Amino acid sequence: MRILHVLDHSLPLHSGYTFRTRAIVTAQKAKGLEIACLTGARHRRDGPDPEVIENIAFYRTLAPAVGPSPLREWREIRALSDRLERLVEEWRPDQLHVHSPVLNALAALPVAKRKGLPLLYEIRAFWEDAAVGNGTGSEGSPRYRLTRALETYAARQADAVAVICEGLRRDLIARNIPAAKIILAPNGVDMSLFGSPLPPDRVLAARLGLAGADVVGFIGSFYDYEGLDDLIAAMPLLHARRPNAHLLLVGGGPMEAALKAQAAASQAAGQIHFIGRVPHEQVELYYSLVDILAYPRKAMRLTELVTPLKPLEAMAQRKLVAASDVGGHRELIEDGVTGTLFPAGDPAALAEALDRLFADRGQWEQRRETARRFVERDRNWSSNISRYIPAYQKLTGKAV
Image (cartoon, rainbow, N blue to C red; front, side, top):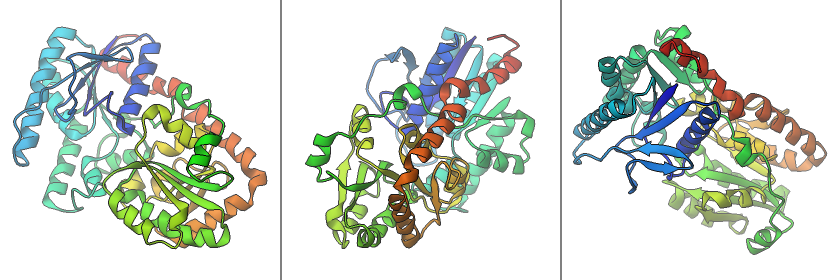
């Protein structure tokens, strides 16, 4: 069976989006499926067409002329639709697997209809909510309502819909999308990448001033909804209880400058370390330095509906996890068993939760082992990938 994935962007760019795609595609190829990928005009990275990365063929869409919104989005839809039609003629897929955002679905749906191909639309987050979370939109605005309507339309027109979590599934059912056509394909971890954690890098720890420290860490993108301002605000409170506590922030993003200014003004400024973005192959070195990974996401529609990937990676790395009690985290973390939950938007509660974890070192090994077993059993891509297979077989009428 030949599966053509339609994507927003891909490797060699690094993001949670591209890593999920790589995991899906790699696992599908291991099952014997023939795979190709097509990225839309928003993949702004020079390279050949097709570009083979990690034995995966990525076809590209040329970016159209820029223009104001919504002309820009309309041009992107047309460009991707035209490129997809040519690629379908060339590569002859049996199944289109189209990944959010909704622009990709709007481009692919007419092609699928003309070519008689089944289309599975995978929603990783609703585009309208992602815009609010990223600070580029506001809930309830005309643009928000239009995007929501387009998302609902795409889900209705697709032959099947895959979602990454129960929050998205429940929301689609509330929009009268039939439950029978929705597949739950949760975020997972490629254990070949995260399954063998490194021992602490003592040289790196000494260079960063973390030798012998109690280290809280965050490794990811610095968006407002991640709540890193609450984590920085919690540090003076934690430091008052644990003078050896340090915060390690690895990554970057729109909130970086504001967070650095906040940290510089903090009474715990000397215990807050910004590393910046690091090459993906070096991320494990920084994981090795952290005792507790903190995920203080703010309470909002995006975080209540969508499950993140990073806590799962931390569990696979045998790291303790402390996270705010938003819906996306509650779907992943059993409080007191696989992680610790604290009230969202409450730096004092965050500091108290971290302090309790540092005080309870005798339970660390059991917590780490329980969390890792959860990821291996329920969130391992090598087994998660089987969730797509019945839908492919039903839609195409072909065996895998």
